Image 1 (cartoon, rainbow, N blue to C red):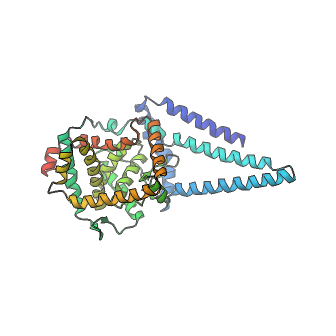
Image 2: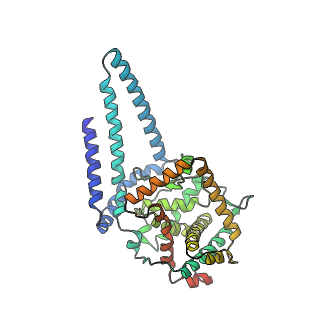
Image 3: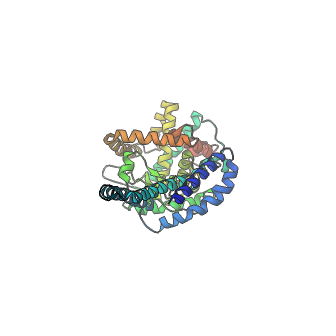
Length: 379
């Protein structure tokens, strides 16, 4: 058992050293790790995940937690009993402690082996050559008009519930199963979006994720995408596509958001199209409001934008997240702080604020097309 502990510790230290040495060598990391090693070593886990409709990672987590806690309790009780009565039992307890320690170190090593290196890889901008420049208020307004009109068009073919909010009769599993289709279409424009993908799974712990204000996760230690299904159904497709971007080795959150947007609007599923434009519009409008509130108000007043319908969807989404946040405000704050610290530890200096940088990518993507887009001549 001591050998197992030493092996797992050496593996962790070597992986961490490689991670540190990879800084500043993004091209090499991309060509060797992200494009060659990462797809190979993550495929078995993704294949296993594809065989069942539930989250394999969460089931393994539950099983490991139950086995670890029950085993420690049993061995501790046995140690106390034998230690007091027969002066025996210490070795069994120490062996179990060694097993728990080994598993913990192996999981820590998995973080670096199965994806953390992608934070050191070339970004989507660098791979595709998209040139991001500072946003101008006028073009941001044009982007919002375009996205708002496209969201309105996509929303018009969907079903509303009695409250006027978009709904869908399909199961969470069936909705998520459609998430990979948009990547096949998007990869025709961006070849780096091709690859082996497994649709995200509905989270078993969706309630806990809701308290933590988390829409989806890609736990690098087990490369399976998981989506919080307590979120509104029109948010689920965008989140699913965001998490699939991580499966392709794109670790930056703003880029995963942008890729999620591109893949969602490229999907032939109407719910995905709306989810992409709705979320893109939401992010862009938040940025426009910080730039110029008059232009923000003007966009909402545009006659070709269903401001009432989209606003209902936004209010419904906010109500869901706010309800969980009010029930457990401390958990929400801790979760955000942990996520912010995690991102900053991986050289994303603006932490959780980085998600909103997808607007700069959308501006770069549509730049030069926006005047035509607003006039309605661009698809």
